Each structure stands twice: as structure tokens, then as C-alpha cells.
Image 1 (cartoon, rainbow, N blue to C red):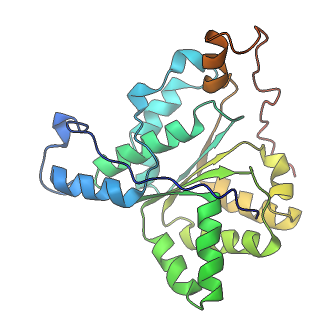
Image 2 (cartoon, one colour):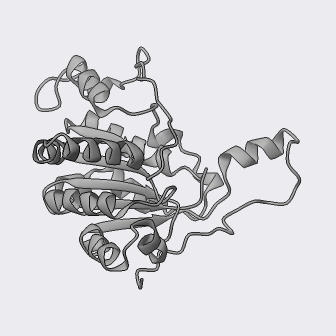
Length: 243
């Protein structure tokens, strides 16, 4: 997997970010405990469901999002897959659901797929892969961002499968991808392995396919930097599982 060499700075938590309902003790912890879980989650930035512009993404089912925000999927160790072209809000929604889980008292970890692969490859080289897999199994919710932007080697695909097997029916995954399921054979460099990955990932999962226009391109158009032609998902991602 070729590295794109991107580093994300640790976020700072704005004063008053947590609503009053978070100021409680007990299972969810105090605000200090919530802030610690938020930092441990390693989100690149803070986004909430309330901040998401549903009007600009009419293909997104608000009822389904409300159900996901209720976190029953996390309680049942079910997965969420967010598909769509770049810029439609997949990462925003993944982080927003992660923040909901943090607020509810769950351990959460956010990783790009590139970072995940780097950690697993290094752990294997240093003979501590088993310990790394255990660490990645611990969070109740693991968010993997940007699957599909770069192809994986056979070794990386095998490591991804091992992690998926470890977490299967034990913890929730949120995966964002710009590729439809029919293209995952190319992403994982192996059709058979991609089928096995999809079998476990989708067994208990909700899939959302966002078909709208990129927020970034829309803002550029508003600023007059692009023509009037809409650059939507030509690009529309098709969640076909018959690979």
C-alpha cells in the first residue's frame, strides 16, 4: 500500500463542546472521563450528527441515521459501511457516530486504512502482531476511514482479514469507502479474500450509499471557481456484493 504521507494533528476540545447531558457521573463518566475517551479516539477533527447538512445529501436516509445515532448497532456489535464518492460527508458521519459512542461511555478508535496497515505491518515485522491485534480488538467501536483510495498488497489484505475475524461479533466497525463492493476484489488484490471480508463485515451491518455532490466542489462552485456543471457521483458508488 503506497503511503500518501499525511499526518493529522491531535485535536483540541473546544470549551463547552459537550452538551449539558454529558455532565454526569456513572457509566458514562464525568466530563474529564469523556474528554479522555475523546482524545484516545484519535479523531482528526470533531463533527456531530447535528452539524451534518442533510439537505445537501437527499439520498441519505435520515431515519436510518437517527437509528444509528441511537447506538444500538454498537450495543449489538454490528457494523456500519458508508459508501460514496469523495467529499459527500462519509468521514463526517463516521466521526459523528464515534463521538456519540464516546459520549455514551464506549471506547472508540479512529484510524485511516493507511495508518492501520502501517501499524499491522510494523507489528508483524517486530514480532508483536498478536499484541497489536488484541489492542485493536479492545475498542467497542473501531472506525476505519478511506478504504479503497489505495490498493492493498496481499499481505496487507490478509492482515485486514485477521483483524476483521478478531472483531467479528465482538465489536463494531464503521468503514468508509469510495468503492462499491463489486470493486473490493481490486482493493484487496484477491477476489476470494474480498468475498470472505464482505461476508463477515456485512453479516450484521447497515450500509449507507451517499450519492450527492462533494461539499468541497459545491463550495468552489459557489465561489465561482468551477463551472455550473454538477460534479456528482458519476462516480456513484454501487454497493453490489456479487464480486
